[in-house]
Image (cartoon, rainbow, N blue to C red; front, side, top):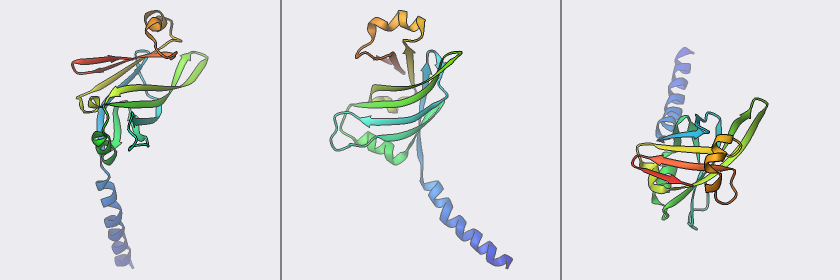
Length: 159
């Protein structure tokens, strides 16, 4: 009886473990700062190529502070797509003040080449923050409630 259970265990192992090992992920060093604090509660992270009719679906990623995890297959699709810019969108649960926690959806455009840099830092400055409002209110485009500064080694992009 025990021999049969052992055989079933090995058979199950051979079926399950290859799926685990062959589903590889690509790590992108990414830090998202929300009002100068590392964001920990980010979900619904999506990357969408801009102006590309052949690629009409968003790629979902998982953000863990310090890393963005994408399936290797999805990352390869992004690299092969014929566009220079990508739209990144995600939702953050943010503490506005002691009594108010808010769910905020962010959208921004980044150059595709930023995904292959050593690191990527996204600084978000919200207009509900008085300090950020004084510094960035005149720079905001499209009526957004936030200003974004994207940093990579030797380059910055202001949105």
